[in-house]
Image (tube, rainbow, N blue to C red):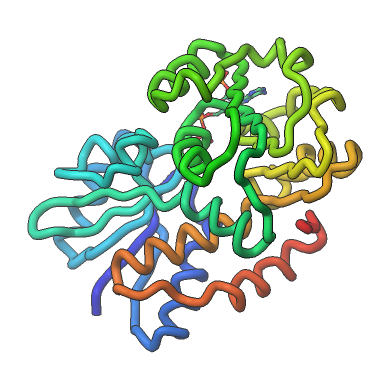
Length: 279
Ligand code: ATR
């Protein structure tokens, strides 16, 4: 049996082992998928031990996605553009890196939630790892202008530079958020609600048929989604569907076929219904 795992810190509450077990059952593939706790300092050693034990593939979550990029012998174009790896594939004695987060988000928004992203004037709040992971895919999906706001404006500038589309991507300081006009898609890619409080977001951001999307799920998504609902957003979406879709894309990299995602998504959604209701 081949071994798979998710590495992160903390990782004990990761839903990935459950999601991959469900995919394996559905595909008729016996897989062993575990959660392995590793911080930045111990990641390389834990991953080497895993490879020695027959590790064939891994997911990488916070705070290891940039470190994962650095240790890969080669990476896909989308991982390079995101500056982060969430999927590792064992290739001989090396690791090959990919990033399925952005495509996972786009699949969830367009496929599951039926949103047409094309030409949407978009606001991305945050410029850390999560924002970097999804920005290239949002641009590729055909959104209109992309405004990136961040508390530390130099990080918004750096992300905009990395994306390399100066006519279309506009970095701004979070403090100027009230001057940016209306948006049709607002994506919360900050970790603010995990550690403290979400920044105050003005109602002036809310355009007609605006979708409010949080890359977090569970309690960490509650404040932003509450803002979206209270502001009259047309669609309010948390990160649970993205989590399932990025997992399915990782599964496809390892096993050659993308699994059906509706059943496990439905199960997880039912369990999270007391926290959020995504439309
Ligand atoms: P992740 O991988 O989850 O994106 P990260 O790389 O540490 O984690 O990035 C966290 C993001 O949330 C950053 O954009 C951060 O802003 P800074 O770059 O200014 O630190 C943002 N963030 C975290 N707490 C915040 C808060 N209380 N208010 C506003 N932004 C916050």
